Length: 219
Image 1 (cartoon, rainbow, N blue to C red):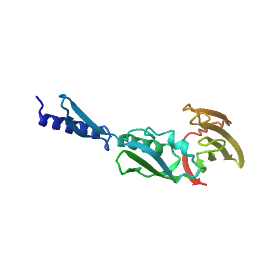
Image 2: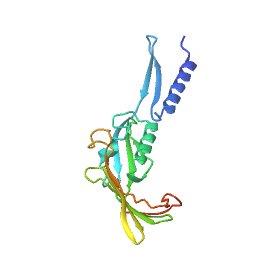
Image 3: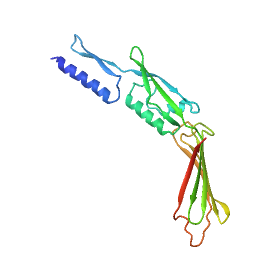
Image 4: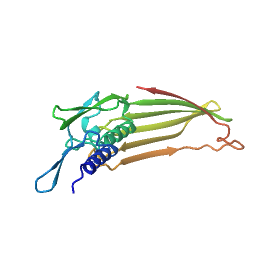
């Protein structure tokens, strides 16, 4: 025997499940009873028909899109949209990724998702000075982003010591990194080169009592 109260309760439960899973625009529209004794459920599942990125200058759109779980043709899901934004923030390419907003079509079957970005300045120089009981040690560190291909990073650091009116290079390092190998596959690639020069001084412990002052400047 068909119980209309049970049908309505089932409809409410289905719509609540939709919302809890992030499908906030999807819903069970109606439940119809056919003469043959069967129930016909009618659903609405709006899909993403456009992704719009605003504010990109140095970053190519495909770099953003490859990080997204919610893409064109997918049923709209607010949970995935929130996770995508968090993932974009963690990339470090942007000083701001605003909360994406969406627009529904007139027939409520299509959704346009809009992202707004503010890109970080791509290069950085850090200058620092350390002091211990025996000497002053200064360093300079730099990062160059998008050097050979988009998203790659070349970073380097050189440390110079000054003691007894003499300056010498203590160490230097160079690192090249691609988070996606040639922007083709999500396999990171890195190349590192470094060297370190040490001068031993009797009764002197260079690790004791060190202080560090760092100045960061983006260019």
